[in-house]
Image 1 (cartoon, rainbow, N blue to C red):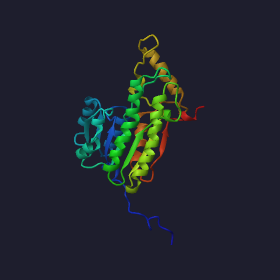
Image 2 (cartoon, rainbow, N blue to C red; image 1 turned 90 degrees about the vertical axis):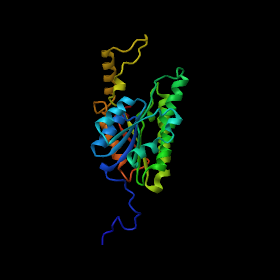
Image 3 (cartoon, one colour; image 1 turned 60 degrees about the horizontal axis):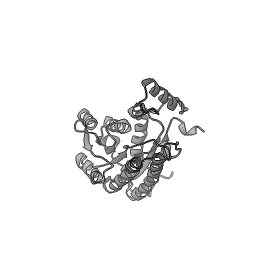
Image 4 (cartoon, rainbow, N blue to C red; image 1 turned 180 degrees about the vertical axis):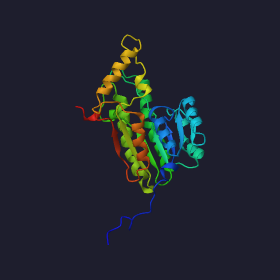
Amino acid sequence: MPHSHAEGTTPDRSAPAAGLRRVLVTGGGTGIGLAVCEAILAGGGQVVAVGRRSEPLQAIAARYPGQAHALVADLAAPEQREGLLARGRALMGGLDGFVHSAGYVAHEAPGSISEAALRAQIEINLVAPLRLGEQALELLEDGGGMVFVASTLAVRPVLTSAVYSAAKAGLIEAMKVLALAGAPRGVRASAVLPGVVDTDMIRAPAPTRDGQNESPSEVERRVERLRALHPIGRLGATSDVAACTTYLLGAHWISGASITIDGGLLLRE
């Protein structure tokens, strides 16, 4: 008789079906975090969207009454992180997933790295997700999942990304430890590493050397240079990252993994 994979296995700790997921998403008001929220909500799940600004959070809550909830918190402030996942769990009646999409980058070359930008990037990109991941270990249902949004800059830095790259690389290693710690309850942790994703942030005019902001044509030329770095021929869409993130939330035999979503960017020499 053929061997059955069900024989002798441990009880199934799978999380509820996709449409029943209850997920807290940091950075949930804009960009990748918003796309993750919308993907979960479209599948019938519930989300708690966390961010610093109330307006975008309230907007998604208004579009999905009873499904989406808003929590305003500055993740750089330890006192505002304290008990955050417990508050989210109370709003949804349970917690099946946690996604950390909030992030902060300040591009500064060595010799010009400000103390404030250094501290802020480490706090938002490494300390906050680790501390919230510790909360998730305690509060997620058996079989729950965490996904951390890292970056390809964690494995291939540029001249101006020393602090951001170091923080995101540290986040990937912290994620692996959280995966080990959660394994006895089937609680998983993984990371996604996007390339350049087309968001309002990358299209915002950047300061130029003369202290002015980029003109619209300069912005477009910069975005075109970023696009050309990706062999697939386009920038990432927030929906690309959201699709992988929501898959990982429900992938019950994936833990400790780092999934690159970059249109082939890291294939470039």
